Every structure is written in structure tokens, then in C-alpha cells.
Image 1: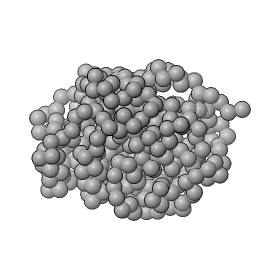
Image 2: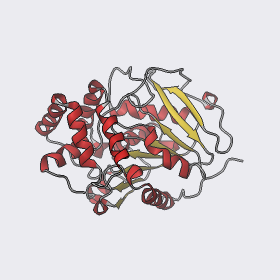
Image 3: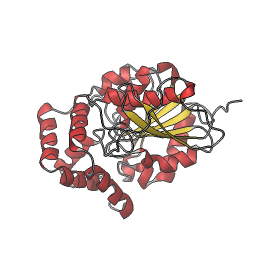
Image 4: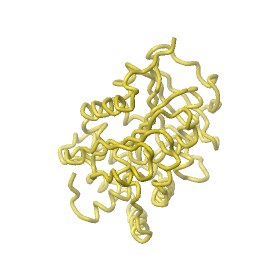
Length: 313
């Protein structure tokens, strides 16, 4: 897609995989380990529950369906698990699906001391262990891609694959420190205004107005102290090194910027990209083009050899 100015392109590039969103206070916390954390559902039964992350922050999640590898959907910046509602319905008919709110987002807690990509990876791990999921495919949008890498490095034996959605464009790209500071300062000066501009730059011109307004509201409502902390954490994050720590195959479905496939293959043992950047889908294909996105996700799962879920007996 085309950005209206080089400045907005830089802002979008810098924030594609960063930061945080509004959240509610703590809820009842379940243990983070073992199958006893939640009775496994019967086929297609929907369950909403809360589990404690490694540091005690409550993490809210939704699970339904049966069959492994399960799909674990991880949202991006200023988003929540509701962004995956269509995919939960579509893929929950054939396998277990989970969508969670990372700490600082949606219905999960905000009471974290250190906001890092690694701490968000622990949120994902806590949910996987609470559900006793033996095999999972982690599907991470934007910031959710690096979060998926962090989670995978902490539970290697359980991860059958990682699918990044409009992330992993160039795993070797790092922002210049001066550029990173300038972008953070722009958010500090006008958080709500910058959020609105960024959303407008990251969705298609013909985007459904309801989707556009939903995203504007979510971005603008992000707690600035959490958002800026995760923004800085994302700028400091070494994506190439994270890919090297992961043993599972990595796939990317990219829709905003062309992909540097060679860079990914230099740092990941098994890396491939579905590049849809010429179609003008924007940064949120699960919302702006769900049918096409679901088709590409299904094809990607088939390419990983997990198109059909294994049903428990």
C-alpha cells in the first residue's frame, strides 16, 4: 500500500510491530501450569478464562474447538483478541483455536513491572500450558510475530510452526537510534493524534469505516506509559537473533511492505513468505480482507503439513 509521505512510511515501519493497548483490571487467576487449569472442552465448546503469566499478571483468553495442532492467535499493537473473531469461527470448526489478550491489552492486566517482548512471550506460554496444548501453531500479527518467537523459544517441543502476519518483512532491519527517538518523541507530543494518523496510514483507502473507527479508538485509548515502553522495547528487539533461537518453521503472510526473504533465510532454519504487499490490503488483513486472509492462512497451514487437525480419541 502507498503511504502519503516518507514520514508516515517511517512511522508505520517503526510501529508495525510495537506497543500496547487499553486493558481492564485483574480478574480471577488460575494456575499457569498443568491440564487441571481448565477442563478440556467438548467439541466446539467455547471457554473464556484467565490465567496468571510468569509474573502474576492475569491473562484473559478464549478457546474453542478440538484437534491439534491448535492455533494460538496473538494480536498486535493497540489490538486485542477480538481482531481474530472471524478466524476463531472459521478455523474453530476443524481444530482447537485460542485467542488471547496480551498483558496491557483487552481484558488482561496492566500491573507489569517491566514491559518487554519477552514478558509478552510468557503470556502466550502461560495460556498454552494452562490448556495443556501439546502441539500448537502460533499465529502472530505485527508485534505478535516477535511475541510468538519469544513464546516458541520457551516451549520448543510444543510448537509445530510460527506464522507471522504482516511482520518479519526484514528480520535484519533495525531502526537508527536517532530515528527511533524521533518517533517516540512524536508519540509523546501527541499520542492520540499520532495514533489516528498511523491507523489512517495502515488501512486501505476504501476500508470499512467501522473498521477504521474501531482501530482509531483502540490505538488512541492505549495507556501511553505502557505503549511507549513497548514501543522502545520493540525498537531494541533483535529479530534476527530471535529467529535463530527458534527451531520451528517460520512463515510470513505480509501485506504492507515487500519481504526480504533472503534475510529471513539467513537467520531461520526454515523460512518462507506469502507476499501480498501489491494488493493494497493494509496492515490488518484479518479485518480488511478476511476471506482472502483465511484462504492464505489455510494454504500456509497445509504447507506446514498441519492442514488437518488430529482429533483426540
